Image (cartoon, rainbow, N blue to C red; front, side, top):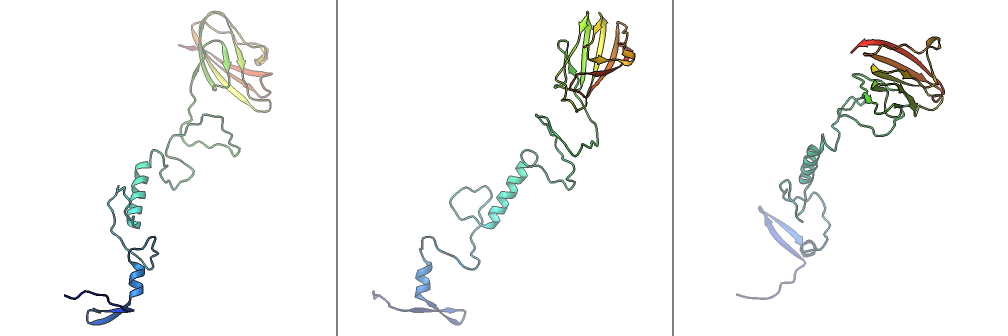
Length: 210
């Protein structure tokens, strides 16, 4: 067997009966290169989903990974697509006051939490519907109304076991007379202010059976 070197500018190989000439420069330029630049549409094996190695990632692998990640995220961190952009399919909780200058349209139930009054102050910053049971003489106060020029209203559901009720001096009743309440009954009071709490107009639905 002979050993030695062959010096050639090109190599000719048989391609199904046809001779094909390939430049040796093309062969050496494409073999064992660092950071090679490919042309055309190079192909590679597609790794199975979840593979996490340094092997080449094909477009098929990337698309499969994206689809899997989105499927896992929908319903938790990604909102599912809804063609009706006026609605959302998940419950929204707002922790701060929201200003909707264009108005608010509600299609479905509108719910307000009934706020239990601990002492005798009605804090308008906490809600619009309040419940309170009294069994002694009670003097109510109202706090944190909206700013003057903004209308604010709230309802007080008062279960009156015993005692008298004293309202803030800012409350104005029809005929300037506070309602007379029957003990052992439940009463509904509605108050409205539009001047920052300087004046509340009150109305009462009294003497519901408990």
